[in-house]
Each structure stands twice: as C-alpha cells, then as structure tokens.
Image (cartoon, rainbow, N blue to C red; front, top):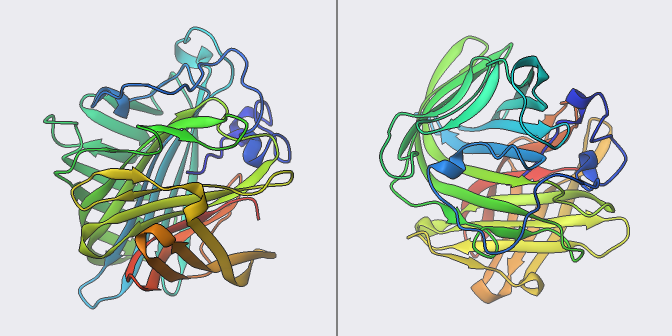
Length: 351
C-alpha cells in the first residue's frame, strides 16, 4: 500500500513532513480524480494510468524452503507524475519511477531501492502482455490468456540477495472497497484498488551466494490515485493475511494527527468473492513494540473481526524488517494464531 517517490522529485510534489505520510495528502490540482462507479478492465488495468499522480504494483510472498524455514519477499514498482498534462516523450517525460525489493528470513532482512526517469526505457509498465520493470527487476506475465496474470515471473537483485519466482493463479482479480473504489478518509480521499491474493509460488531465493529453493503464496496489490490521503493522515498499518481453508483478509488503519483512525478491510472467500468489512467491525490493538532504527514500532498486533468470529495475534518473522529507503517504513512477513492460524504480510508507515 505504501508509495515513496518524493525523493525523485527533489522534494517537489511530495515533501517529507507535509501533506500526510510522504506527501500523499498534498493537493493534486490538474490530475485525474478517483470517483465511484469505475469499471475495471483486464488486462488493460494492469498497465499504467499516467493521468493520475501516483500508482504502484506491489507483490509480497510468504515462502518456505525444503527444511521448513520461512522467508518473505517484497517487490514493488512505484510511478509518480511530477506534474499534470499531456504525456511527454523521452527525457521530457514527467513520470518518475522507484522500485523496492526485500528478502526477509528469521536471521536477516535485506532490501534495495532503484530509481529511474520515465520516457527512456529504464522503467515502465505494459499491459498486454503485462510487464513491469525497473532496470533488471521484472514482474511479467508469461501468458497472454485471461486477465494476463495466470502465470508470471518475479525477479530482483540486490547487493547481497536476489530472487527469481514463478507465480500462478486461476482466480480472478479481487476488487477492494466498493467494487474497486477504496475510501481512505472521512474527507473523501480514495484510490482505485484491486488485488490478486491467490498466487501459488515456486522458485529460488539467494542469500549471500547461497541458493535456496522455495515454495509458498503471494499477494499482489494494485492502486492508483492522485490524493489518497487526507493532509493530517501520518501513516498506516496494513495487513494482507492468508487464512485457513483458502480465505484471505485485507485490512488497514490510517492514523491521523487530527481525526480518529480510519479503518477499512475486505474478507475474501476461497472462491474469490469479496465482502467489505464495516469500519466498526475492525479492532486493531498493538501488543508489543520493538526498537527499530531508533523508533518504537508495533511489531505484534491483536486483530479482531467480530462479524467473522476472528480473534488473532500476529508476530513478525523478523522484527528488524525495516526498509531504510527514501521514505522509510516497516514491511515484513508475519504469522498469526488464535481462532484462525496462518501467515501474511504487515506494512507500517509513519513511525
């Protein structure tokens, strides 16, 4: 859910400390607006939407090796338009790109960041066949059938880690919020938001030159907007959880300096049917904080969804899962126990 492109603008559109986390609450005059009732088309909506100011392609994966050891993988590509208006070619392009890659184990957390200017081929996204890339990091379909993501490959390389994975799913995309219209505040901010939470994964990760075969599950999020946050919203806590029997749960709270937290979530049946959760049905309580990069970050949580009889506690695979990127945040795999047992990912910003 995170977007962190302000560094590419030299502080321009997004400046740290203003307009909500990473400037995502700044006014976006001249850019396209997010409104209810949009119809989504696939694979077209896998591609970029340059009339909107911000956009991201986001994949997280919970993985195991043959010995049962756990790993987590993150792959993200962000796009930001520095100014509205007709799209320009080459070096004149107003699009900038940033990539984040992470690999987490119980003992270590590795990450890398890449930046690029649009218009010169260094980074970009095509819809059909789907391909998203920045430098040699890629997330690309190897199928032209259906929605374009029945089978895909995912790869990235950092200074001391890499991964190359195959993702497969026969499920359709899941529209979050009100048929893809995801409200983020009581002041009307929103994004277009859909997910593919049903990927099966196989492939290989590499840590310090050691190659490790892995299998597991992955979750893709796609969002675009021009102003997804209210100015006072300083950060969020976002969960993507794989429940027993194939069900999925997405939920988040947006924290504010001026308003009560804003909650939203979606309960996803094993067959893919999505049911938005009532805001009053979501209870998130920090259980334990951990000192990460000189900040107290709540790495363990109690999560309750009364209507679904869910009461769980989450614990991180590695509490040191800090992404010390241009806009720093915590992102890592978690496990949970209680009325439901499973695994997933947690992202926390603004701490």
